[in-house]
Image (tube, rainbow, N blue to C red; front, side):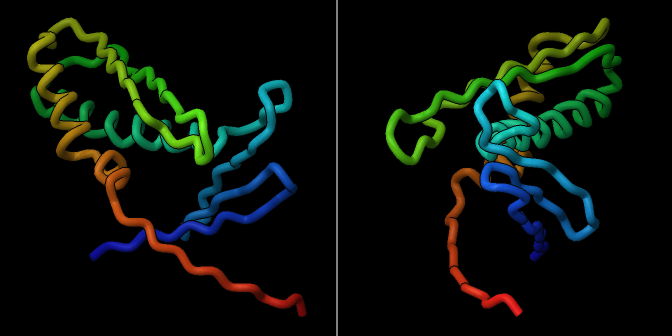
Length: 138
C-alpha cells in the first residue's frame, strides 16, 4: 500500500497552503472572483482530475507513437445548489492536436485514461474517514 501525505495550513481566513512531503506547495483561496489569487478546493479537484487523466492519455498516445502538437482538457463541473455544493456532473473535453492520430484511437485512449487508469477519478468514489484533534499553543 502506498501512502501520500499533504498538510493544509491556514495563511489567512480565506487563504490556505497545501504542502506535500517533498515541500511542494499549492496555494488555495476562497475569495470571490475579483480578489482571486489561487484556485478554490473545488477547482483544484477538477484540476487534479484533469491532470491525472492528461498524463495517462498523453502517455498512451506516445506509446502508440503519435505526434502531439498540443493537448488540453476543458473541464466543467456542475455543482449541487444546496450545502454541500458537490459536483453533480463533470464534463471533460479532451483535445488533441496531432497530424497522425485518429478520432477512434484517441476516444479509446480517453476512455481508458478516465475510467481505468485515473486514480483521481477512482478516488471520487472512495470512502472518506476523518478525525479531529485540538492542540493548545505552547
